[in-house]
Image 1 (cartoon, rainbow, N blue to C red):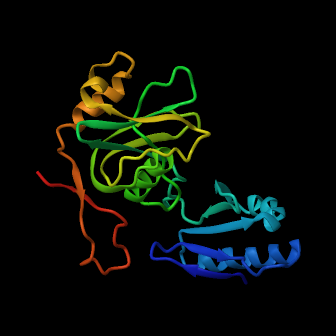
Image 2: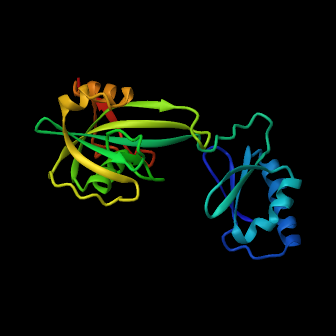
Image 3: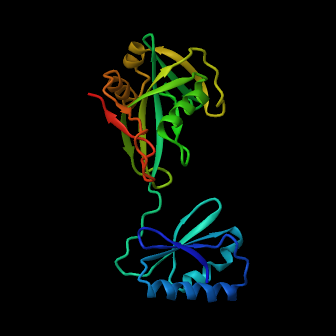
Length: 246
């Protein structure tokens, strides 16, 4: 029978990392784990099939598994053993960040290569497993060469649908600049970066309504600061905590 683990939600996860058997062997072991899981009143069975094991997908589907999600390295399927068992959604949101960097009355701005591109805050997409604070510092540096320290989350906005069908969450973060010199690293995406007088930015007709509103609200500096987690020792401690300092 397949190696497996049972989590705190009473769900089974199969470990096929070292499985190299035939389709018939796979079928025998799959049926066995399904039967044992039903006897033990488990709720779900999760199975990840990496590239070399995708030939077993038809067998899984024939025995009640359904597609759940797909990553670069594996396809995930799930089997509901109880009718009312809850199956967590696959990722439904993408997360983006923008850096509000104000230094001596000037706002750090970037423009893309599109002729319709207007000055905007530097930023981009948060990578899988990356923290918001780390992501916005990285994106600002890649697009402008300006090193920064994280200060706070000033606000966020959502957009749906995006071209991938997900909801996009965009966090605007206040950063403190550690240098002024601009060196664009991400030249494929960014055409121009500069320090712009904040009054000119707010009053310029070439700024989108959303970006102008973001800057106006950010000037109020009523953000959420990052909370230290040194006292959190449990294994389920949050990756990041932001809280109002008002």
